[in-house]
Image (cartoon, rainbow, N blue to C red; front, side, top):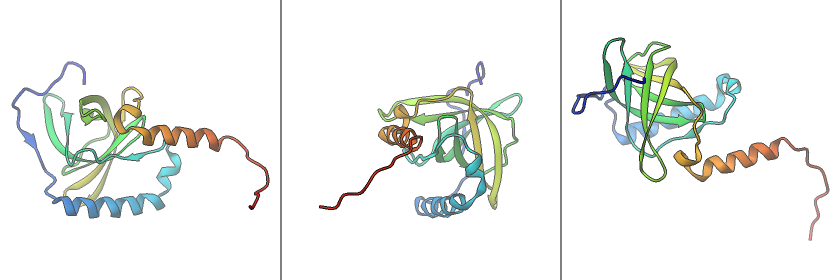
Length: 165
């Protein structure tokens, strides 16, 4: 959303009224559901849980104004971010999300909404695609590096014998 920014002191909409315990249970439920879902097979990049902060700021361009929402982070990949929000968001909506890096600095990432799925009540799971691929090591640390190493290893065919002492 280059050029459009939230006015300092602007009101933040927090439409997700869940306790920390309810959020944990919801994450567990959605993680179990998504583990079995076929959509993960369409993804090109691995996703990692993102739990560095209980809420993040998402700025949505509503076509004339930018509205700031407090959202619950779900997961991150080099290409996008999953989050929970208490309102429907149209596919194609321009947005930016402020995430916390491993050194506790705020990183603002411009993106577009690529999906919005109703969970229950007014709660929705939203997927955004970043305008540019991001370096996950600065955002989630060694988990990204470990995954890259495993991905590289998965491309090799290993053979040999197991030796017992």
